[in-house]
Length: 160
Image: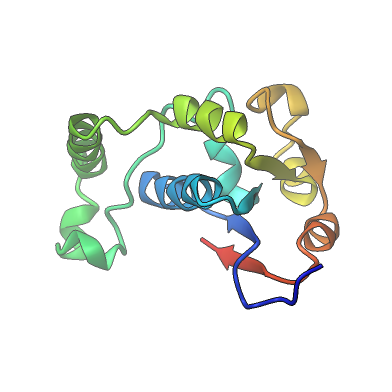
């Protein structure tokens, strides 16, 4: 085995919120890792589970309240219809650059070798079953299991 030179060998991404911008950030980073030959795994916990929930994954929204990148007053972001409008605008821009929708992106990642895991604690807390989730998740695991999978030289963990 060669001496470790500091390169990233595995990305362990924890997704805790299923806002459209967070989901795509995690997906782009995981997919990009695979394209560079780096192993990648995503652990979906708490509200991040919505990104792999069959009935919710195509209905994710942009966060307009409390999102400083929106460059609008919080009160304006909370007006009825603003979240839907921002989400619609973002999806149109993503279509222009051929960004896949959430389900297609999940398919692409799984085909490239990204491992997807649902958090057991969050699954229990929200009363979700494995059948509720995207079909190709690797399983439902504990945070301890996720940490064990992340052990080793060259592993980086990222919380989104």
